[in-house]
Image 1: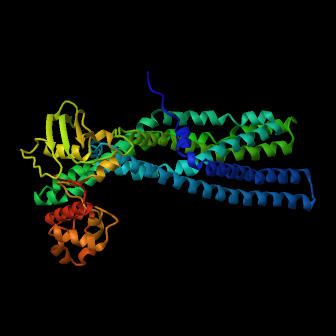
Image 2: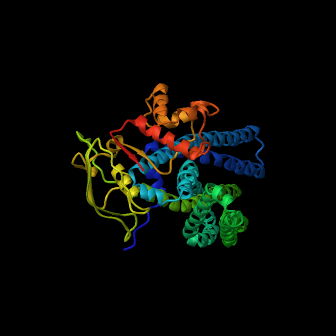
Length: 499
C-alpha cells in the first residue's frame, strides 16, 4: 500500500508548534488588514454612486474619504504588525530546526554522515531550511488571511447581488485549470531541482577541496570540466523547467483574476434592464476587484506549498534517520578492560570488513594493531570509540556491552586521534582546548610541551593565538597531528586510541 504523504501546511504547523501563538496572532493581524483594505473600494463605489445620483452633501463625501484613508492606514499598519510577528516566529523555528539537526547528527552512526556528501548536508542545513522562512513567515498568515478575506468579500458581494456574486467566480476555475497543469508535475520537478542542486554543490566542494591534487597532477582542465558540467546541467534544468511552465503560468495569472470579464457586460445589461441599481452595480465592480489580489497571492503561495512538500520530506528524512541504540542511564565503570567478542561488521551490506574478531585489551596496557591497509584496523578503533555499533557479536568495557553505556559517557572515556586530523577555524590555543574546554591556558601550554609542539607553536606569527585556518590549512601535516595529540592528552581520558 502506498504511503500517504503528509500535507505540507499541516507539517509546517506541526513543526511550528512552539510558535503557534505568534502565528495565530499574525493571521489575525493579516486578516483584519485585508478586510481594512476593502474599505477604500466600498467607499469609492459609494462616492461614484453619490455623484451619479446628484448627492451634493460635502459631509457625505468627507466621511467616505475618511473611511477610505482609514482603510489604507489600517491595512499598512496591520500588515506590518502581522509580518513582524510571523518573522519572529519563523526565524525562531528555523533556529530550532537547525538545533534539532545538529543534536541529531552526533547520535547517528558515523558511516551515515560520511556517506552523505558535505555539499548535500550544506544544502539541507543551510539552503533548504532557509527556504522554509517564506512559507512560515508569509504563507501561514497571508495565505490563510487571503482565503478568509476573499471569502468575506465574496459573501458581502452575494448580499449586495447574488447573481453578480456567482458570475464573478467564472474566471477563477478556468485560470486554476492552467495552474493545475503546472502542479501536475511540480512535485517531481522540484524534487529533481533539489537533487541536481545538491550534485552541483557537492561538485563545487569537491573541486575546492581537491585543488591541491588538481594542481599537483595538472588536472585543472578535466577537473574544471566536471565542475562546469554540473553547473551547466543545473542551469539547463531550471531553464527547461521554467520554459515548460511559462505558458500555463501566464494563462493562470491572466485569466483567474479577470472577475470583471463577466461582471461588466452582464452587470451593465442588468442595470440597463432595471434589474439592479447603479449603486449595487458599482459596489459589485469594486468588490470583485478586491478578490483579485487575494487570488493572485493564493496562487503564489500554492507554489510555495508544493516546494515545501519536498523540503520537509528531506528534513524529515534526516531527522528520522537511524540512530545508535545506546542506553540513557549512566552506568558505573570501575575498570577499563576492553573485549571484542565474535565481532562482525560491514560498512555496506554484503561487504564484511571484520569477521568474528575476538580481542582482549587490559586496562593500563599498550596494544598495537598491525596489518595491511584495508585489514580493519581503523574499523576496530572506531567501533571501540563508539562511532559505530557492531552488527554481530559485542564489544564490552568493564564487562558491560558498549550499547548499555550512554554515548556521552562512552565518549568521556576515550580520547581519539584520527588519521585525518581535523582542526577548527580558530586559534591554536582553542583547538587544543577542545579536549577539555574548562582547561586554563597554562594547562594547554603544558600538554603542548609534552606532545612536542610547544616550540613550533611559539614560532608561529601569533604563537598560541595564531588562527589555524579551516581544517588547519595554515599548518603543516605534522603540526596538525601534534596539535591533535595534544588535544587528546588534555582530555586525559582513561582510554587513548591513536589511529
